[in-house]
Image 1 (cartoon, helix red, strand yellow):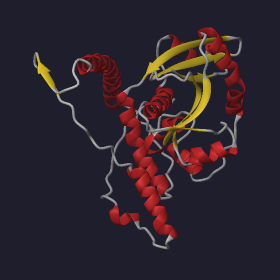
Image 2 (image 1 turned 120 degrees about the horizontal axis):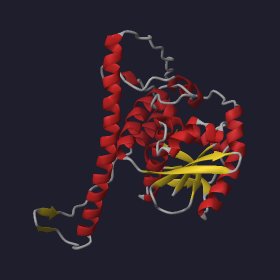
Image 3 (image 1 turned 60 degrees about the vertical axis):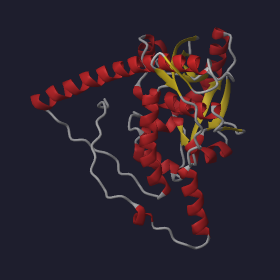
Length: 306
C-alpha cells in the first residue's frame, strides 16, 4: 500500500477535507495518485527500480528532471490549479524551482503526518523514489513494502487529526496519463516551449445549456467507469481462478483458455533517447521534423478552473 499526504492550511475546514469525507478526490490529485499506482504496477511486474536518493536532495532533483514524475501529471493533463503545462516545461528544461510557503509547509508536516497515520493504522510507511517503465517515476510519501495496488490518500490537520480514502489502480486514468505524457515528452525531448493558454469567456444561454449537458454526461461517465472497474475486477478474479485449475489449454461451459508466450514490448522512449544521444555525440544532426506527422488542430474539454 502507498501513502499520499496532503496538509491543507484550513485543515478540517478545507474543501479537500470535505471532499475526502464524501469519498471523493479532486481530479488533479487523482491524476497524481493513479500515476503513482501505475509506476508501482511496473515495479511489481519486475519492470522498475527503486532509486537510493533522498527526496529534496540535489541528486533527486536531477533524477526527476529526466523522469515523468507523478506530481507533474496534473499539470501535463492540464488539471492542476497550481501549475500550467508551459510552466512545468520550463522547469523540466532547467528553470530552478523556488520553494513557496505551501511547499515548505508540506515538507515540514509530511514526516509528522506520516507518523500520525502509521500510529493510527498500525502500519509503517517509508518514503521511496521509484522508476517504472517508459521513464515514469514517483516520489512516494510512503510505501509499506507490500504489493497491494492501493494508495491511502491522507488529509492531515495540524491540530492532530486526519481523514483517509483508499484509492485503487484505475486503467482509465492510466490511459489518459500515458497519452498526455507522450505529447508533452516529445516536446520536452525536442526542446520546444509551450505557450500559456488563454480562454475566451463565453456567456449566453446556448453555451450554458450545452455546458450543463457536458457536465452531466461527464459525471455519468465517471460513474460508469467505477461500475466497469468493478466488473473488470470480478472478471480478472474469475480468470485467475480458472487459470489455476489447469496448466494446459482448456475449454468448457462456453469458455476457452489458451496459454501462449508474448515477447516484451520495445521501450521506444529509451531507444529514441539513446540513439539520438549517440548520433549527436558522433556529430550527426537529427532533424525530427523529417519524421513528424502532419500537424492537426485538436480540442480538449476540461472542467473550468475557478
